[in-house]
Length: 250
Ligand SMILES: NC(=O)c1ccc[n+]([C@@H]2O[C@H](COP(=O)([O-])OP(=O)(O)OC[C@H]3O[C@@H](n4cnc5c(N)ncnc54)[C@H](OP(=O)(O)O)[C@@H]3O)[C@@H](O)[C@H]2O)c1
Image 1 (cartoon, helix red, strand yellow):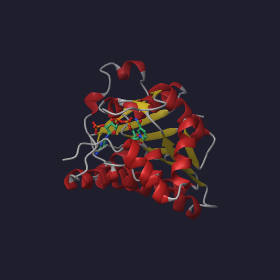
Image 2: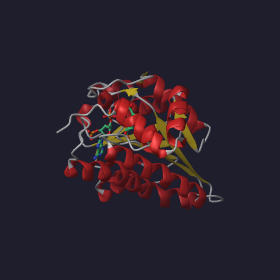
Image 3: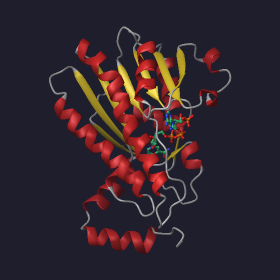
């Protein structure tokens, strides 16, 4: 049966790959971004069941209105995917940029879940999904806001998984490693186990279909990040400052 799926940040990268995958299965898909002209010009022709909304996820009213317009009768799945990075790694923090990262990466997930929650609770069925990151398991050098924002998303989902038990709702947290998208194309550092976006989206969709609670991928990155997470923090600090802290010294 056709599902109603809403994806924040569905205009490029992982979000758009997911939108295409759900549309190809015959589902109705709502996507949003701050600038929907980023979608391919012919997307309507190729994917007629995708409907796009100009929405900033930090504006909860805009997001609620878009979700209500897209799914007045009820929503099956929301994927809180919209997110940004901080750009190049810096020892001296750009506090304004850090605030923006938290507003979008954490506030945007809360706003997306809020836009879907009541609709799903009313029907006692629905699936809340957030795209976090492996970066949320450790404090990466020069990338504190991104790591911190994704850590917040991981724990938000962990709590919501407990809180929604027995309600008919499911919560899934996705933690990708490096996926080739406009976000990572700006990176000037090595990206081990980089994966094409269509392959990443296919693995994510599979985890969502299987209602996994926490999906960390690719498997090589899962091993690396689990080891780094479990290390005594003094060792972690030593490894990271010795080997990976290659940010500029300004
Ligand atoms: N690529 C990776 O390696 C990787 C790894 C781990 C986690 N992730 C996470 O995966 C998610 C998708 O990233 P991506 O790599 O696909 O990046 P992307 O290609 O840059 O896509 C980001 C999407 O989010 C939208 N967006 C950003 N800020 C927004 C806002 N305030 N309101 C509404 N939409 C907004 C963007 O559209 P507009 O700019 O037009 O608003 C775009 O559609 C992010 O949460 C990212 O942190 C990515």
